Every structure is written in C-alpha cells, then in structure tokens.
Amino acid sequence: MILAGRRVVLGVSGGIACYKSCTIARRLTEAGAAVDVILTHSAAEFVRGPTFEALTGRPVLQSLWEPGRALDHIHLARDAELVAVAPATANLLARAAQGLADDFLTTVLLARTGPVLIAPAMNDRMFAHDATQRNLDMLRHRGWQVVGPAIGDLAEGPSELPGRMVEPEEIVVHIERALRGPTSRLRGKKIVISAGPTREPLDPVRVLTNRSTGRMGYALAEAAFARGADVLLVSGPTSLRPPAGITVIPVSSTEDLCNIIAQHIPSADALIMAAAPSDFRIDQPAGGKRPRINGSLTLTLEPTVDVLGATLSRRPAKIVCVGFALETGGDVTRAREKLRAKRLDLIVLNDAMEPGAGFEVDTNRVTLVTATDAVPLPLMSKRAVAEQILDRIEPLT
Image (tube, one colour):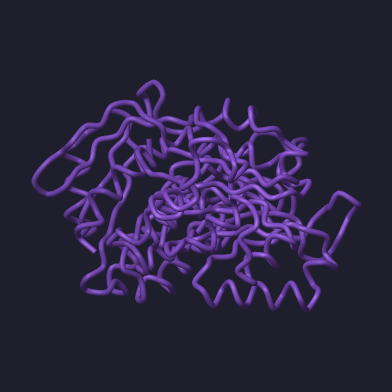
C-alpha cells in the first residue's frame, strides 16, 4: 500500500474526460489513499456520485448546502495532503485563476494553501486561447503543478494540438510523486537505471538475446520517480510503455548499453543496473541473412563487455551502485564476490529457477546482499521489490 493513509482530494469538473477520473479514484484507493471526491454540478451530469462512492468507499461531495457540511470545504482545504483536479476544464481554470468560490470545488481551491495539481482537458482551440494560457500562468505562479494536456483524439475527433487529458495512470504517477517526493532523500537526485535485455546480431535478421522483459527495471524507475528523483532509464528492447515523467534512452547491444552508462554516470548520484545484458556475442556476424538451405550452422561466441567493470573508472566517488545477479541456485557467496569485485553497495540476487521469480512474470523473490548481510524477501510484486531496494539505498545517497 504505497500511499497508505495519505489523504487526497480529487476534484472533478465537467468535461467529457471526467469518466477517466473514475480510474484515478480507483487507483489511488487501491494504493491505500483516502480519496475525497468533489464533483462540480457539470461533472455530475457525466458521472454520478454513487460511482465514485463505490470506488473510494467514501461520501462524494457536491453541494455547499448539504446539511452537516457547512465547514467541510475549509476542513478539506486544510487537512488534505494534496488537492488534484482532473479534468480541469477551461471554465474551472478561469474561475480558479480569478479566485471565484461559487461551488464546493472552487471554494476548497480558494481556501487551499497546500499543494494543488491540475490536469487540464478541453478542446485544443480552447486550450490554445490566450485567456486559458494566462489563467494557467497565474495558477503556476501560485505554485500549482500542471500535468498535461496531451496530444491525441478529442471527443470531436483527431487533433495534433494539446487539449486531451493525460491518461489516468500518468496522473496517478504525478500524484504519488507530489505526495512522496518532498520527504524523500532521493528528491532531486539523478538516478541512472538500466532495464531489459540486449541483442547481439547473428545477421541482419536474427539476434542472440534472453528472456528479460524489463519489468524490474521499469518498476524501479517508476518507484524512484515517485520519490522525487530525476530518473534516466536506459532500456533494451521491450514492449513496455515508457514510464510517465522519465527520460528513456533505448539501446540494443551490450556495447550500446555500456557506452550510454559510461556517458551518464559521472553526473549521477546512483546507478541501478537491472538490465540483463547478453554475456556473449557472435564473433563474426554475417552481413546478410544466413539461409536455412545452407544446412547446419556452427557459431563461435565471445564475451561481451562487462558493463559494471568497464565503467568503474567513470563512477563518481560518492555514487551509490546496485547490481543484479540472476543465478540458477541463488548462491549468496558468488553474489558477494561480484559485489566486492565490482565495488557495489548492494546486489540483488534472484534465482532463475524459483517459481514466480526471474523473467516474464510480474512478481519476484530476491535476496538483498551487502558486504555484511543477506536479507531474503518473500515473493512480491516487482514494484514492491523496487520499493524495498530503494529503501535500502536511499539512506546512502
């Protein structure tokens, strides 16, 4: 429960995108947050209050005139850790910028002195209008965080200009960062994370690779971003969607991975090598596709570059370094030898033969190995494993 006990006010104003707010409310609740939803009168024309009440398990707030709620707008403005408005329509932005307080949501916003996050959503021409841009500038000047809008299909058809509300998952990521980042020691730190497999060409068509999906590295990137870090994700080929808010540099071969890591670690505060680079490559890749009709094929393999070893000289003195060791047996002694040889602060050992761990699954079972101890973790989601790893390295940064 990443947001266990955190209190969030989710304001929903009356745009067609407010159906996506149901997903935001659900995701925040699943993460452990207490979510108080405020619907404007227009929003309630699109999505009724009972929907949000069923998703959050809490009463939905709509009117200033409901009995027993005379001061709820003041209490919510004061007690919530974050007020998020998604969607924030052009009308809502205009009223908030001018300090109007003519409904429950704008009254809360006017009384609010803490963090506010807004996700604009409207027709692209309405967003581009000078009045909307001035209103947004005014809200940014007050310290409000603006997420989006994105470019994509609108209710009235395709568009190549901003206006569409960013997807709920991205908004939830930014809400988590706004809640967790300010108190984290990783806030503002640069963390370089590698993820996924590498590919070594056999010929222009075929490659030598492994079964890594990149899920562990991507989970680490998402968790570090949520803690306020500036994350650079160096990713081998994967089908995963790039995480919100994170710079992703794609690579293909192990040599490519090594070169990018060497380029960026001199300015990094932490390096987490969660990628699964190929250990071998073809000594002489063919210039054209090798036809099957030629019969059997014998390959000569040679070792690829050891990324952690090759970049030792480029590491800053105070950088925190984390490596991964995927073994078929979970040998702590061998992992600790790798820890010493590559001057790591932590090595994450997992057994490729362990059910529910390793590649192509959403869970993992690892042992966190340092120079002095080895802590086995139970089977858990890769995001939960990522949180455990960051808990270990955060005090070292």
